[in-house]
Length: 140
Image 1 (cartoon, rainbow, N blue to C red):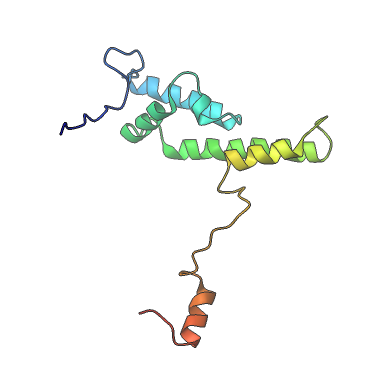
Image 2 (cartoon, rainbow, N blue to C red):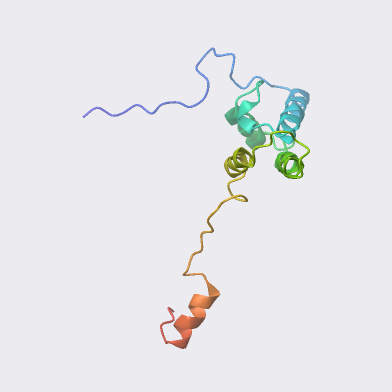
């Protein structure tokens, strides 16, 4: 049996897309542009300067240059942008606003906050535990 070679991740040797921001200042400026891009309501994966995975690698390797808190703020601003679009459309400030596509957009961009279904683990539900305790079925 032949052993399978594991595929290396990242840019191929000699690629221009290798981690190319060697200086802290360059990383900080790029991350500032990235966060601005995201805060305007655009997706993280559509940033034209660098691949999403590369940016997140910089965040992991250089947290002082690319702080997660800054991206979290940009993501909140992105949600605010899209919610504002929805509010303006709802009150008639956006001609031909299509609420169906807006809702679809929100569910895809913010699945945690805009999901139609709520997942509940019945093993952790206090109500279920109270019933189990009352009927002598408590698990200990």
